[in-house]
Image (cartoon, rainbow, N blue to C red; front, side, top):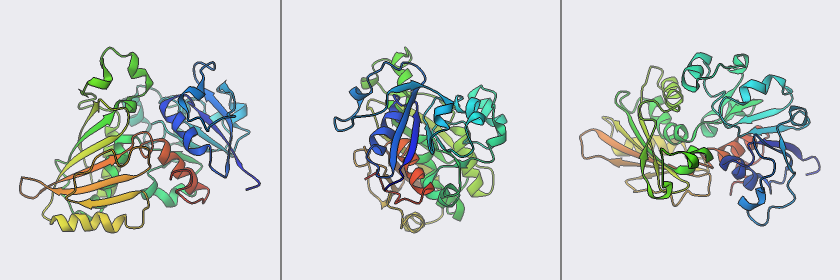
Length: 337
């Protein structure tokens, strides 16, 4: 392709930024023009990348004038960073954001959960939620794509088809999620709260995790009424991977619930639906896949839906690249298989 798209990546040395580089480096329609970091520009980025990746641009401090020379800006900055500067980025730039800054349409909800005044509330209604399989048509036309959190991705994909059809009861939906510790970001390594990460299981954010308003907002939207999901996350002693176990009530049969999900996602290359299968994260690690399985429970009219993803890929960088492919009408699997 003669005219490659010039892209800039901010947060390039974080777990998610590195995954974007790994996946998009060989994308035939892309040239990585700039890599930006918030902190040290002296870090050796190649230490954390495969040997075949070379000739990357040097790390730079964030420079909006350089971003404005690009076609696409992947922002893997921490929450509450992009909304402070986005109004100085040209409207011609396609922005794919991996933080929470534009996921919620209400600035007051954002400010409550992220303890930061939103500096760009004028853009909240312009942003499209980047849950690829659900918002594909809007993503195609969007210049500001707000990629979902990893937990919401693993929970909303199995629930949205069932909420739309009212196949399940809308009260007392429980989502119990386990994530590899990379999901908490690099800063967690210096936290005394979670010692010995690779030997430790920890509950965190119980009753007040920041993904709760995101999960509840989009669940309510598709149920067409208020839904509050009981959600609790945990960190487990593995670097990557996420498994959400969702407990639902329904008068339908397991076949009906399976059929609703299977029909909804039958043409989706990244989503596989199973019935009565014990799924795990091993099959989805280092991929953009989602595995969803419906199982009977020991309690009457109750079912267990399990959903597994790679939190760094389908839960972050992979879905961002899928959205990039959707936006520019490339094959969605480009760079991801």
